[in-house]
Image (cartoon, rainbow, N blue to C red):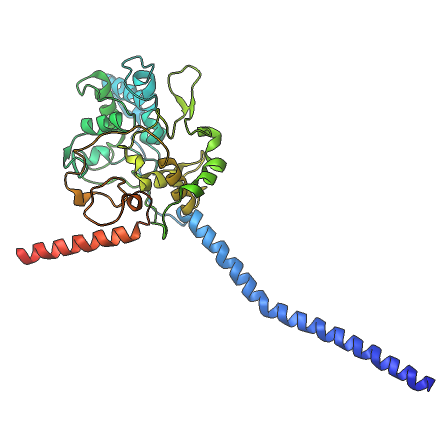
Amino acid sequence: MPVEHEENKIIQQLVAIINKLLLVIAVLVITLIMLPVIFNSNDHRTKANEKDINTATAKDTVTYWTAADINTITDTKLKEQVVYGKELIVHTAKYFGPNGSVLKISNGLNCQNCHLQAGTAIFGNNFGSVASLYPKFRARSGAVENLYKRINDCFERSLNGRAIDTLGKEMQAMVAYINFTGSNVAKGKKAEGSGLKELAWLDRAADPEKGIQVFTTKCQSCHQANGEGVFATDKTEYTYPALWGSSSFNDGAGLYRISNFAKYVKCNMPQGTTYKSPQLTDEEAWDVAAFVISQARPHMNVPKDWPDVSKKPVDHPYGPYTDTFTERQHKYGPFKPIAEAQKKREGAKSKASVVKN
């Protein structure tokens, strides 16, 4: 009996060892099966994030525009005028702000706050195509506009001020600077990297609530919790511009359209960002844009804007419209349905015109 008991004990121990080995083998098999799934899932997530935040960092073979060099101007008077024009773009408020030395007619922002690096930054709302394309027809006014009109539009909308004398020294200097800056672009051609870089529509509406978090972590340190920026110690201009409130751009400005604001911040904000190295995902850019434009700002009465209502952009925030979408959807999206409906209308109109002719 003792021998038999000892044999049973040994068998039980062997069975226990075998069971443990089988368990280990089972775990290894399951792990081997799941590894490709795990790596594939992580790879997809990584690629999705990279695709979203680094759309601008893909291999880029485009030769982008660079501004004409002021130092190449040989005409002394012209050079002085162009240099003064640049000064006015960079430090507009020192001359036209609340404490301006020429006139006190604007909110304290500088042209450079919207047109980065004095209008020379790639996809920084630059002046690269202005000289080559103006005068041009603009659907907002329903007329052919010259550069004087365009600059005064900025004074009245982005600077929430008054138009300046088109024959005055300051207007002439700004026109001279902008024209010279883009003088290396052939007439009728668009400079590579001018204006703002296109940004894909979201599949959802941009969300001001989500934008609060983006603003708090990415923007607030410069533009402050109340969005009213930081005025320089000499009280002549902003060190960091106001994004809303009484000293910001009014609701007639181009940046009040959410797509323009989202494109602008995607390639340029927060500080240090370029089109090559964006810091915001596409969704973050749309959401923070939604948050900023949802805040209170000056109102501009513009009853003559968009005389042909059908030409309004899909994200124009005020009616009337030629479609049945709400003002809220036109302001925050989703925009794909609006864009598709607009495309169908234009196609039908074009087809009807062909049939008629």
